[in-house]
Length: 296
Image (cartoon, rainbow, N blue to C red; front, side, top):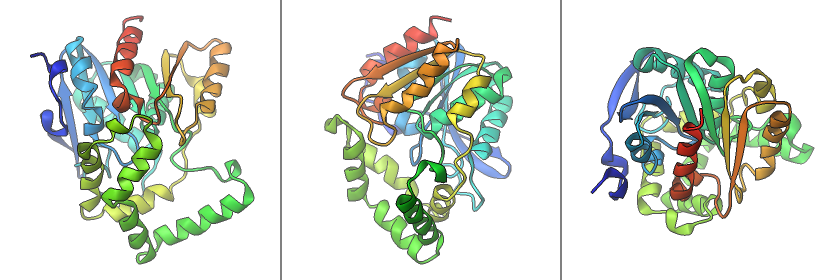
C-alpha cells in the first residue's frame, strides 16, 4: 500500500522541534527533491496538511510543514503577534533547514504569509500557492462600515480583558462550537471529522493559548495583497474554494487584475468547496498543485 492510499492521521508524520529565539517550533519534513513549505491558517497546524504532505512528497518533493509560533504544538509565547513576526520565523527556518529557494504553499493567513515571502524575500522562494488567501491578519478599519467598526473595537477590548477574554475564548474553543464553525466553512460536511475537530481543539488547551488568541485577533492586519502583488517576480497559483463565506471568491479579483498587468498568476476556482479546499477536496487540489509545480 502506498502512502497516498493509507488512511492518514495527524500523528502519521515524524515530528521535530527547532528552537527559534528561545521558543520551540514543531515541524515535519517528508520526501526528497525540490523544497516545498506548507503554512497553515489561523488555529490550524501541521495536521491540516495530512492529506497533502504524503502526496506531494511521493511526487518527488521535499515537503516541510511547521506549526507557526502560537499554534499547534509550537510554544504559546506571551508576545505580540504579527504577520511580520511569522515571516521572520519562516526566513530563519529556511536558513536553518532548507537553504535553497522553495515554493511556499499556504491557506488563509498562511497564504498571505506565502505571498509576503514571495514578494518581500524572492531570494528564498521560487513561487507561491495561495489557497483561499486572507486579505490580512485582521480587518482594516476602513474595510468595515461604521457600525461593524465600532462592534469590532468593542470586541477587541472584551477579548483583551483577562476575565471577559477568557470567557469568550472558552466558548469559541468548545468542540461543539469548533464543529459548528467548520460546518459553516466546509461545503463537504463529511470532511468535518472528529480528528479535525480534535486537531483544532487540542492546542487551545495549552497554557497561554488564550493570550495568544487575544494578541492575534487584536493585531494589525499586516500588508495587503494589493500592496504585495506589484513586488512579486515569481509565479503564483491562486486556488479558491468557490463557496468560502470567510474569504469570498470575489477576493480573487485582485489577482485577476495583477494577471492582466503581466504577472505570472494562474487562478483556479474549486466548485463546491469552502475555505480549506486542500483538506476538504484534496483529490482535486493536489493534482492541480502538482501540475502547476511541473510547469516551471
